[in-house]
Length: 281
Ligand SMILES: C[S@@+](CC[C@H](N)C(=O)[O-])C[C@H]1O[C@@H](n2cnc3c(N)ncnc32)[C@H](O)[C@@H]1O
Image 1 (tube, rainbow, N blue to C red):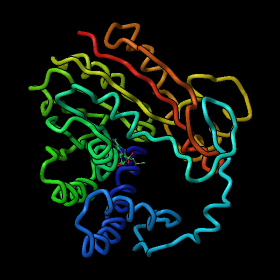
Image 2 (image 1 turned 45 degrees about the vertical axis):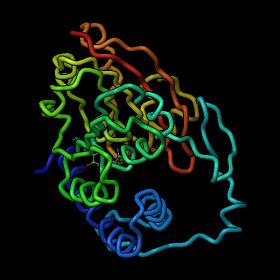
Image 3 (image 1 turned 90 degrees about the vertical axis):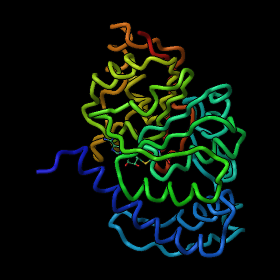
């Protein structure tokens, strides 16, 4: 029988393959990376690619979109926002990417975050690495990268359960991040932090994951809601305890923990926390 992690990888193998069909249509007409990414997101939102179905284009009515009230979370507090008022993960990561020679995303899908970091002013000379277990995600990343030949990006196979960091051994100042990917690994392997500690260069890690209920285990309405969704979906429940254990073992040094900084109550899986840590040798 497939274990839970493999099941998520199979799920995303199909999911990125379905989304590639939509990208095919967009890339027939569009050669600008930024425009292709935004057109894709607009068309993909509201579609479910869960079963590997082909996606069709969906265009929200502009008036409906403008009227929409999104029940959001900001720094753990409930707040109603316009749908146009988004937390920008890529702008935050672009700030963290200054002066780095390598930027690597673990569980990168088709590389959306990396492309957006670059387009949002990430370093032009840095090596960008999209580390992703699915071939469909890596293939799509390779296709999109052709639209921006000046960007030095490559996609490589990656699994949190068996991390291979040989691709980054030549770099000295690395930004490593996750964006809603470690959440699919349960239990989270402590050995991942040992691998980070063994990387020779300086590594700053930014983990963006829906783990507020792990950081603040109180039974507030928010944490109960997230815990219920996490349990239904079999998402990760022990990332934070493994991270703290890694800090106690002097493998990493945690600089900052911000619980529930962003997300929507309509989809509790989107409620994300950010943890910044550095590797220790
Ligand atoms: C919700 S998507 C996020 C994609 C990307 N990080 C982003 O923000 O656009 C989750 C990603 O995690 C990846 N993933 C699932 N299990 C994984 C594992 N064991 N190791 C590495 N990545 C994994 C999936 O293949 C998928 O690309």
